[in-house]
Length: 318
Image (cartoon, rainbow, N blue to C red):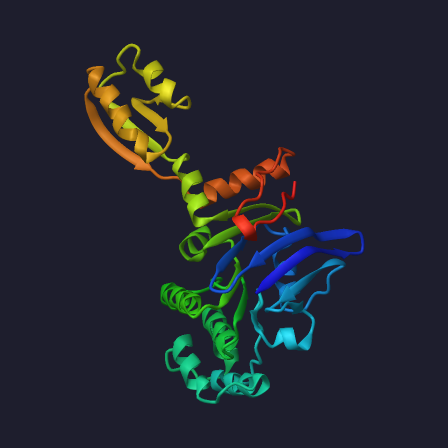
């Protein structure tokens, strides 16, 4: 439903996005990750038809139409990073205005106001709302028309726990309905919970795409088991290091990196060496750790991880 085909955008001599090739299909939720200034907002705005490519193209729907085409733009609802709504209107009046603008069913107004959960403030002026309430109202505006493509730029910014729960439910509902959801985020937990795939932009280039299965496999290798022992028997560390080269002894603990599947064998080795286990904890790998590694590799000039993700993957952006 969304296809970036060699998309590049420059502002004068400044490169915002370079040679991006990426597809997001129906029923798929893809998270766009990257540090500030990496091109995430330019990328989402291009799919909303608000940014014209310098080279390449962005196409929406099937058959694909240029994202700037009026027919293509009718397929999309877009939530910008900074939500700005008329402060002199009430929340309900804002919804009624956008309902008329998008030609949505009037019955949708009350439905999306319930989603916004403004705690009885729907008839108050938007100028009296907190930042979180404005964000929730902005999300409600974005879902007012039942479009097949939902574009969200930092949608969880300023949301409280209730707002996050409502947002998670919204994404699951859209996924089950076969909609295409493409969102950017700095919140790794939100991305890991919601996305089917992860696309990572650094300095305007796509450096990796990972499916949930690929992410799980990579994170498994980044877990660490911490085993507190009464002592370190002679030869134990070298035995462990033959299977886990990064293992080390620190302040009375064996720190053993690697997947959870290897941990029983390590524990058997510890028991066979005669050490007493006095404490055991495990820290699983996290998306934010992998993300920092990828970003750091590119920013420090190391080779980027090849992009992955089957038919939806982009070419290596290194």
